[in-house]
Structures are given as structure tokens and as C-alpha cells.
Image (cartoon, rainbow, N blue to C red; front, side, top):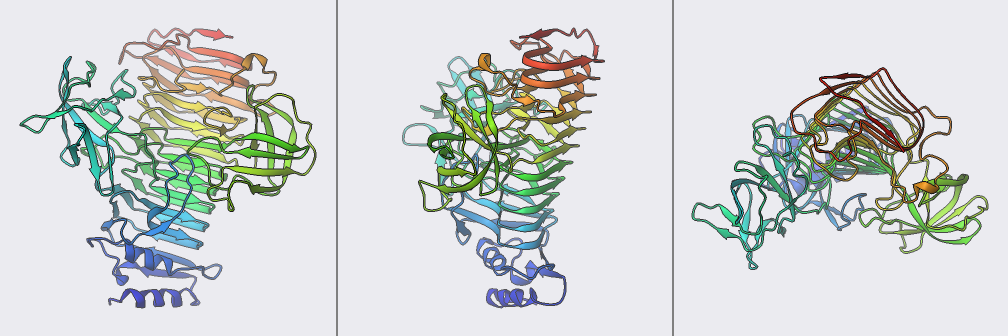
Length: 603
């Protein structure tokens, strides 16, 4: 039976107040069907009809298998400030769940295809939401994939893949374009077509695409783009640094489950969660469409990213490949203290241009104050009495806050200073995942609560496989790691390229401008277990395994290291283990095979 959209909304609203504890909503009965030219308006209106429903009831939104096309026209529109993304507003949203409780979006076998620039799925101010079984892709990705035809000293000749929309613009440059967007790519990542690994020692490519000419066969000559490493056949993902929106955005929500959801492309990150509590990823993947997928890339940035979350982040059984940054990044955000107004009142500001406009904390939160140059705490934990934006009427869009603490602080003379929110820090489990063929790093953790990284495969992550950071000077991402267990993982040929923080397969690299003046280590300490790296397998062609800076309590034990000849060694760090201001470290019972020789440097 078919209903008009108006009738559908009425029926949906009435059903929510029935006696049943589970309400099945068959979206096909409301003309939300695969194959439609543009499903945005119907989905927007139908989902908006849910409203809040009675406690204990569950609503299941069931989509049929098949392809659903979403366009900006008719989509929901909201102003949303998203951590670590470009703050471009308003955003067009394909599926918007807001102010809802106990909702299941059941879409097994559904392919959600998006057009132009959109935020595909947003979950805002919700509780107990499950997303299951669907995939997200864009019909015309903003990354342009090309293949090198010739590589000569007088320029590179390349052929754009058939799905890429491009033209030579009025300035004579190669320009990619789509619905509502156009750009000249600024950089690129090179892939080996025989393995899909990022090409050894190419890192971020310089790709000048001005003054191009088109040959009779449709190939393009870029005379200023020369690179002898890019042999004919090399696949290059040409891109910009724009990241307007992730594929899935979760904000101020709790009890979130993503089950068997696949992200094939997003111009930002795959999943960005901020100010959320308790998130489970079960078989969530940022991946290609299989071995025969003609594409080599997935997301423009991280696969998953958690900013200012709390509770438990549980990520298991995922596949992360082809993305332009980490598989997972967990952190909070330092605010820089801009002025002290009284012994207990300060002004503090979001500093990174991609991170602002959302709530940083609230009354009752526990915070710590930090000296930015040495990354040392001063004083004890403090409690927020009040916090309010000073440059905006609302939190949305705010960059600076006035924060009043519950007691006076003895402020140090030295500046700069920062402030960290200790409440919005999660414990993390990252287990049984595969991370491969991506740019930059494998996994990044910056949280003082327990982190377990176990039984994962890090396969040709290009840069560092695991990074523990912390920075109140550039990225402003908190915080110190106190309890990290890295065990029974396999690391295969990391460090084929150099990016930021790529000192070893596992890098513990907080940004500390004045480490010589530091008295207390940043990571570990304070009676916590510290960092344990145990029973892992390192299959490596190069020397550096572990680089650690400013750690109190570190154990590297029971690991096996196999030396391979897959690539020539090249890293400037020639030490297996390098420690800078590391205390209470244990190295024992490690096994070295195939001629690998351990070397240790302690500074």
C-alpha cells in the first residue's frame, strides 16, 4: 500500500504513541525507494516526523536494499561546527537524526549515493541510535584519480579515469569539477597499481597542473609536473586539502552503534564524533568496494576521529584502507589561555582554524592547567564553576570562552598556558582491525584513560603505524596517555614514506618546545601503568621500531622483529629504540630474526 508523504508523516506520528515497544517503519511505504532521481526531500520529511517518542519504545527505520541517490536540493540544512573540518556553513544533510531516542536505521544492502557537497548522515543530540548495514559513497568524488602514461623531464602525461569530470579552465590549468564545486588539485598521493601500496618514498606529491595541454587521445600533458619516481602505470589521487564534512557526523549523543556500515568516500573524514559518550563500531569500515574496485582512495582525511568524547570507544573488526590520514584518532582539545581576569577566572580560546564553534565544557567538569612550552601541569585538578562564550551569543560559532573555576589559582609567571578538560576523555578498545595502504599514520591515541590496541594488522600504513601525541602548541590536541596496552598486533612495512611524526613504527611524540626545562614527563607517570608494547610482530625493512619522548613507565617486551628486503632502508633514524627523556623503561625478551640488529639510543 502506498501513501502520500503527508499521510506517511501522520501515520508515523500516531504509531509512536502505540503500546508496542518496537515500531517498524518500512520506508518503502512512504515512497522512499531505491532508484528515485533524488530521495533527499522524502527522507528529510519522513525522518523529521519522528520527533521525540515515549521512553522505552524503539523505532526501526527500514530501508530496502538498493541504491538511493541524495542531492543537496531538498535535503535538510543545518549550521554545524565539526571538529577538525572546514567550518563552512550551512551544511546540506542527507539523513538527519536529531533529538531522538532508541532509533535503529536498518538499511542492510542499501547503497546511499551522494552528489555535490553534502554531509551524508548526522546524528545530533540523540540517545541510543544504531546505524546498520548500509554504505556511503559519492557519485563524483572530489579526489581525481589519474594514471601516468609518460614520465619525462619535460613533463608528466596522464590520463584521467573515466568517472573523473575535468576540464582545462580559463587559466590553462587542469580543473576538476562537479555539482556546486570546482578546484585545481594541489597535491597527490601515488599508488602502485600492482599492490595498491603507496609508492615508496613519494609522500605528498607536488603536482603543478597549470599550463596543461590535451593530446588527441585525451591524455593530458602537465609540463611543470616532473617526477621520475612516477613510472608509467602509477595511479595518482589528485586532491586539495579541503575537508568540508565527514560521511557520518555524531554530536552530543550517547549509546551509538555503527554495525557493518561501509564508507567508500567522503571529502572529509569517514566518521567524526564529538562530545559523544559510548560508541561501538562493529565491522565499521572505510574501504574500497572490493579487490576489483577501480578506485584506490577512500576518504580525504581520517577514517574515524573522536574529539572530546567520553565513555567507551569500542572499535572492532573494521577494514580501513586508502584514506589520506589515520584509521583512528582519539583526542580532546586544549584551549589556549589568552588572559587571566582574576585568581579564578580566565579567558581561553580554540586555536586551530578547523576546531571551534562547539561546546568545550560545562559547569562541574574537571580540568587541568598546563604550561605549553614544557607540557607540564601546574597546580591540581580544578572544577569549572561556569563557562560562557565571549565572542558569540551562543556556543555555536564561538572561539573564546570565559571560564570561572571554583577556587583561586596561583598563576605562574610564564606564558603561554593552556587548559585541558579531563571529563571528555574516553577509554578506547581498538581490536581485530585491518589498516592498510593509507597515507600518514595508522592509529593515534591521546587520552589519559585506558587504551587497548590488540590483534590488529597494520599493513603498509606508509607512515607511523601507531602514534601517541599531545600538543598545546600547534594542533592543540590533548592529552597525555597514562595506560596504553599495545599487544599481539602485526606491523608490516610501515614507514615507506615520511610525514609528520614518522620517527619509528610506533612513535610516542608529544610536541614539547622546551623539553630541556621539563621536570615531569608528559606520558605515563602519576601511578598509572604507563605504556606497554608486548608480543607484537614487526615485519620491517628498516631500523626504527620505537621512538619515545617524555614518558615515565614504558615496557617493550616479548616482541618479534623480522627483517625483510621489500624496500631499501632509508630512514634517518638508524636506531631500533630511541628514548628522549624516558624514565623507568624496560626492554626484555625481544626476538630479532633474519639479521636484524637491535640498537638503542638514550638521550
